[in-house]
Image 1 (tube, rainbow, N blue to C red):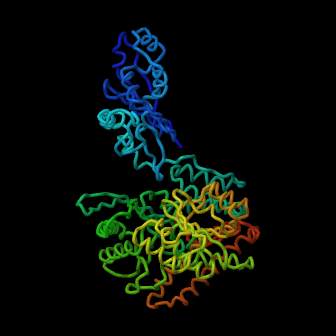
Image 2: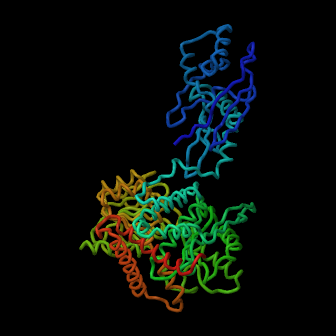
Length: 633
């Protein structure tokens, strides 16, 4: 979506040709504010500034055209009186190309436009369509001498227009702006609607958090209508108990200093100490931390254990960093965080961008600062504590949950085509367990596109995929070895024919069009591996098509179960069979609790919304009961 950024105004007309050398005013409207720029004579050349604002190839003008017209003012841009003044001046020799040239460069001062790239608002230079990078295209086209082209390149790069585009881009690089207003669904209950309105009024810019609140309130509408006292309970629940925001300074391998922002949101500890992941990702912000913490609070309440929920992380990007740089960052992050965590208060776990390496550095610094080794942030290493299947638990749990849904339909996973997104820890373990149960997983994805193998992945192919990821290679390399596989750039796997979908990448990865593709592809069950993977519009499409949705707060409880087994029985090294038995039993309890709550509040067991509403209702009632017992705290 392009936002209007530029308006052009000119001072009053002068009496002679000095009109051409007067100062222009550019008014840049950005995010509700205006910036008035003055451009002096000679600072800009009209021939450099034209380009269509979006996706239209620029028309080329020859060097001859430029020579004929480089001193001609753009009459189409001047006020009426100024145009009359210029018309009275002596006319230059004209050719047929003059009119075409003038039309092509009519929008001289539309030098910048706003677009969203990788979730961040960028201000692009209209000439080169780049931000923060050098000009890559000759504005005169491919004709003309090399000296002329190089002169044009140099003049453009040094022009005030281009520099101002870069300055504004740098000023706005950290601002994440929504492409559209908050999507607000209508509620039947006025009481439920008041909760959503209050949340939007309090945190209007926290889009992810508002979205998760709306999903929960919709699921609780029947509960709130029966007991309006839950309105106050929900309002208290939606305010985190503790939010910690801190700076994380660190030094890279070149000796340069950097600073990132760290977060930890301890959302609710009514049921017990907090559990929740740490996410290191450039787009991590307070809204994301709050929505993840809210989801984790409901997930832990639905699990067999009495636990609270938390989340956190940083806008640090571990990609491309050395082990030494990541160690320095993790140690600096823990220097602040250790004050707020302990085994009986809050223990972090792995999340996006945080794996065994990062957790090892974090735990080592925590142990050093705290002066003890009680508790562990992760359990993949036997020489620390806990089982050897901690990292597999979430992915395995998703497949176990899908198996429970299919068993109630008198079906099984064997032979079913499964579309999986993502290629991280959760996605890979989903693939592993699907293969073990005889299903046919056909896709994985990364940030650049997705890979599809019509023959399906097997254990040998899965091992190859893991090698590719471990070596930081692209999924495209897989198709070089397996000829029947294809990799599609800038695409998602949801248009591939499938029976069950496992979105395991990130929040809002399935939008309205993706949901339509899923329905048309034959998908009947969607198991949420990532937190809130569907946009509100996508959820409406899937529900309308009777696609059964297993929410992440229920299907993703495997990680919570494994973490508690690890802490409570850390002296035992579980055999894989014993661990899976306990995990399956915990997933079964979670599934039955969700269905029971849904039926009690009038949702049919076969309804596509049954598990969504039932999981939220069961978790909320558990938390609300304890909040009521503990009073106003």
